[in-house]
Amino acid sequence: MCGIVGIISKQDVLPDVFVGMLSLQHRGQDSAGIISYNEKMNLIKDEGLVSSVFTEKELEKLKANIAIGHTRYPTVGSDFTIDAQPFMVSKPYEIGIAHNGNLVNYVELRKELNLKNNCVVSSCDVEVILHVFAQALPEEFSVEALFEAVKKVFEKAKGGYSVLMIIKDKGMLAFRDPRAIRPLVVAEKTVDGVESIAFSSESLPLTTTGFKLIGNIEAGEAVFVNQNLEITSKKLAKENPAHCMFEWVYFSAAESILENLEVYTARINLGRELADAWKKTGLKADVVVPVPDTSRTAGSRLAEEIDLPYREGLIKNRYIGRTFIMASQVKRENSVRLKLNPVESEIKGKRILLVDDSIVRGTTSKKIVKLLKDHGAEKVYFLSTCPPIISPCFYGIDMPSKAELIAARLSVEEIRKEIGADYLLYNSVDALKRALGIKDLCLACLTGKYPVSVPKETESEFEKKRIEERKEHK
Ligand code: SF4
Image 1 (tube, helix red, strand yellow):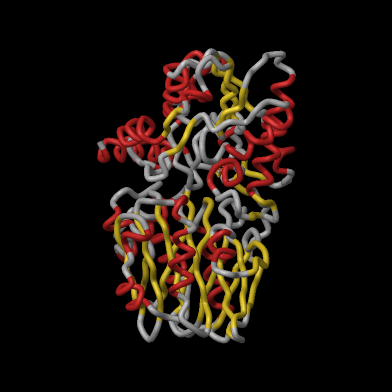
Image 2 (cartoon, rainbow, N blue to C red; image 1 turned 180 degrees about the horizontal axis):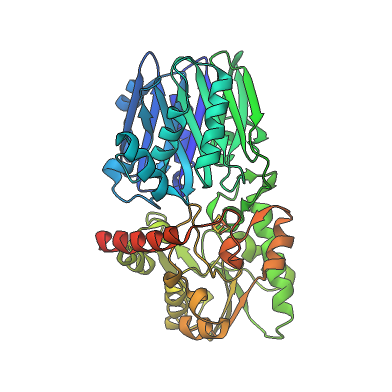
């Protein structure tokens, strides 16, 4: 997963892009980059957090009325020096690009493009999207030609992706894959008579900077905003949407609104569903303890529904990165030990209802259960707001290898034993659907039914790549 934010205005947008990127940091901590255009394209990208990559001096260099920021979390690519976004091309005219998502036919497309003119240098799939797009453009600029080129991208590039582009001297282009798997929202603001239009992976970076959310870019829709802030949009594909359910369960910020559903509300509803399922077990507990931070919301609703105290029995060290988005298993295991501190008075001698958003690999869950037991918990009942994850994601979430998914290998009872819990309860897929209340969801990692079909070679290529990446990070 990655985070993108793009703003076009009649005044300098860099302060808003920078602050917006800080609000997108949870979507990627590997590298950060900004491309802006002000008489020339300016690009700065580097490894690390947004606050460490950009100094005031650098933001000054980037100063412009149009800019795109990107926070990166590697999925397909792994070398930040080559794969960090944004990217740019200069033909037929200068274009800067950043995206969030993954292509399932990346290998095939890269081969095809490189056979023609060896143009793809990175292993980041946005570069493939950029070349497919640029090669479909005529020399002469027109908005209609931009939309035709996006159509070409939709025809050729299969997967889940949201894309932002700067078109030199013309404006900003935004589009979302034909299934709208990855999110993309649009917002506007007018301050002292100066209007700005912004796009982002989530609403939080935009509302934080004073924008008012207008809505979502639709499945297969392209939107162009010219330098006068005039908007042209066109729906270029007619497939049914399949929005990634994991955005609400885990990835997006609780304050964000996607597809008109607040992430916080979705998590509250997931807690209510868990409460209904828990009541049927007939088990008794003393306290509800969430795994911070994502599960707090669901945990609070669960506690309310079953009339139990809600306690922060685990305190998170804020300065350790999100476990799930660290690329190496070694980093992951070390960070689990470092990031959660138990509060013994809330744990000792208690039957704990531990709530987490999901169990992906099971390594974190096992360590947390042990941590609680080591600090005197009498029982640990583990509740997951997300149903068992049984299939890899090929659309941009870092769980591509089936071998890494605990629920792909083991039954619920076997998982319970493996993580050391006294009881294990997942929300069902139906409960998740009720909680989100959205008809068009991607549930492929829960059901194995992929909205965009995945070629067999891609499955094995992804698996190989992830294993290599893990080795590199060791
Ligand atoms: S497979 Fe799962 S994680 Fe991937 S896009 Fe679909 S719902 Fe999201």
